[in-house]
Length: 242
Image 1 (cartoon, one colour):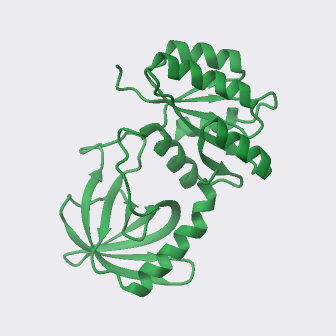
Image 2 (cartoon, rainbow, N blue to C red; image 1 turned 120 degrees about the horizontal axis):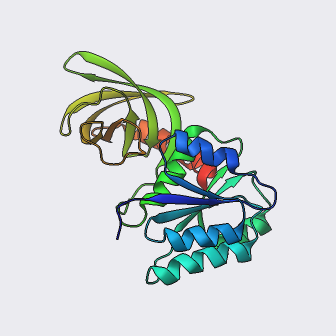
């Protein structure tokens, strides 16, 4: 089995996802693109061990999606790929059919880079590299700062949960470091002690398509701030809910 991980992006007759596939490549995500189901089936057969996610528009013909997933599942002993739907939010009926076909993630327009990268990265890494989580996490573009030994750094919150966050920053600190974190939610500034649990950097790379930065777990978050983060996460979760 190869360690390469690709997302197979295939279009409907409306040709919705060509620009999205190029944009994902610019974000550092390996993408195979097909403009028709038959081409997607050929790619699925040629790169079956490497395809871990399938990206489709809401207008995809569900039987075509099922054929591609069955091709991947048949060649991988029952393990198919995760499905991400990208485009304008369709009707509830269409979403129900997509869920029944295997769709697990969505990025609804107007999409931002953080939601797009988060959903596709999560789909590519499932199931082997995503540990079970007690708290839902969501993509964000919130601003943040952190302080270590009197030195301050700025960051963007790539993902957020009520228990921790991944801070995108060119200057992550080492795993195990204690620090103070401030996050600017839409209506409140949250401050809390935290600890770095792992780093993704050019020197310590966990996943090439993840941003450079560090994952932190909150240590001493107040009940008020935890409740506000939890409310924000619930609202934001709609951006990736199929």
